[in-house]
Image 1 (cartoon, rainbow, N blue to C red):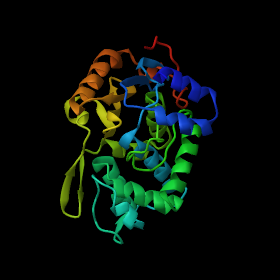
Image 2 (cartoon, helix red, strand yellow; image 1 turned 45 degrees about the horizontal axis):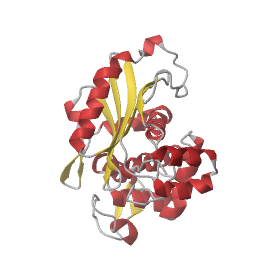
Image 3 (tube, one colour; image 1 turned 135 degrees about the vertical axis):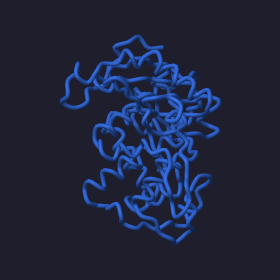
Length: 288
């Protein structure tokens, strides 16, 4: 069965069957670039094919964390405990030790900059009681946001054959973070942070090499390949872009830089577009 056939079946049948269809996901190259002002898709290739999100998953963990902060179910200085389960998550983590505490602010910053798996799990356990329960909430929220092909199984993005998404869905999530939590979204521009005397540097090298890129998340597992979601702004234009399934981080970043070179100048300016909310994504351009 081809990937295209698998996607069509998954889209046509129930979300319950999608759990089984997700087993056929594999690392495949995909991309999309969206004009944030208009919702127009400026470029897309395999944008609706199922892929593994890897640490892009943490974008939804942070979305739900920001929501909890706004709803006063969390505070920035609140301390959360690293369980043995959280502490066990390799490779990137704060590694403070099971039973020790970090603040919500430290956990969020470590996810943004370091992609800390232990922090993602600790937040999930705090908010949902368990990784599994929180993953159900993640999937429900994804579908509410229009991410119809996404299923989450854990808050970190560590490998799970049933945890799947698409480039289009990841772009939808990137835009939703920007739209729904504009102040918190600024955290994604962090290039590093200090944690208890340690200076830690971020993974998103595009923020160092491409003017205008101000976030948001990278991801990699052997199954997913190298993924990235970025936001970029220049001359009043803003886009969210996704590249998935590349063989190296350098190839991933080069592809995204090329997309920005070609299509960011085609995006609309803020003054030329409506300012009342974020429009729906539309495939105004031919897609591949």
